[in-house]
Image 1: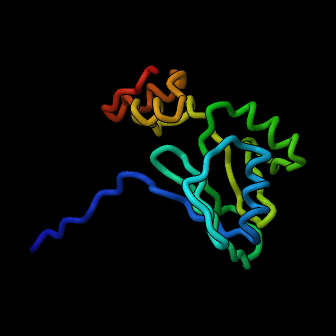
Image 2 (image 1 turned 90 degrees about the horizontal axis):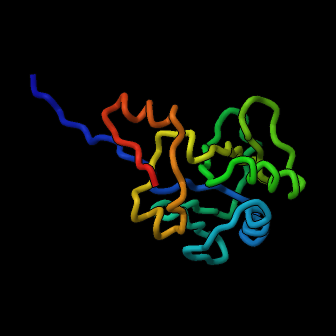
Length: 152
């Protein structure tokens, strides 16, 4: 039997979200988050996440997402909670900090300190986020996989 090698998944480059209008989407997300644009045209905008990005694409037609979502990592989850509420956005019920944008995209907010996902030190430096660290639980999860959590 011939063994077929397959590529290994190593991460996400970007997430693409369909929205109704690019300018409205940028204004909505700008009320909640601080971000920089990588680029923009009439039908797309690219929100920079250091070594990753969110692509906003004009043309959402489907109904609101229910279970389908993505987790967006922030430097301060409680600050995000306050910004979401200040923007007039109602968090979804449940134990997580989830909300839907005006086009029905479901987003879960996660604090950087709580997850295994780790930005490289040079990326954190370039983003001005060298103060971010991992909590004990995240460090334990990383150690169990033989990965060292950065302490910056």
